[in-house]
Image (cartoon, rainbow, N blue to C red; front, side):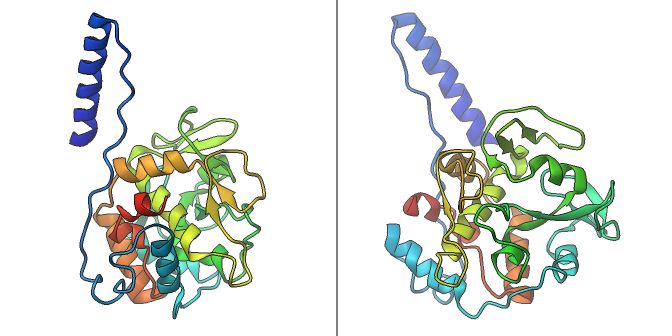
Length: 268
């Protein structure tokens, strides 16, 4: 991306200058997500517009939790064939971490199949696959069975090694790094879950934190990395279309961080 390349040029220039004069220059950070406006601001988000911090988070929780249609775990199969359809091949879905386009008919649990990946791992807070957060379409995506297994329930961070069908995603002993093209998508899905599920509906209060190895606790990290990914990889047309389809056809709620990625920095 151009913004990333510019930051790299600036970093090189500053580092070179620092060497010449014997100074230390702090690392540059990602440019915060730009403020946006949407057609939903005067309707769906009207009670959140103008708020910040905890007040914004509370308002968004109320908005995205109201009048939601909840899907069963089995219903996710057919829904994913629509939400994640390959724009260039209507017979296929796009797999999240690997980026592979695979036939919709190859859904299941065998080698070469795609299955239902929980981006917020179900063991983080014991979500289970009963109707609720464990079947929330906003964070469930198609993925190759083996790649899904590689991610397991790892927290998100940078580093590691690529693997078969990784698409550029990486894994190490305690974390998983998605391919660059979906890093922002992953961040916005995780942070949606943290706002949607606040412990007031019989399920765990989900929150991001800034560490890995969260185990069965209802946390996923690392927050600082997720915020960075949100800034570096803004929503694209695939992610925006997915949000619209979930809203209009399935759950009838939206991921607010796809519509307003700048709200991530406002809340966290």
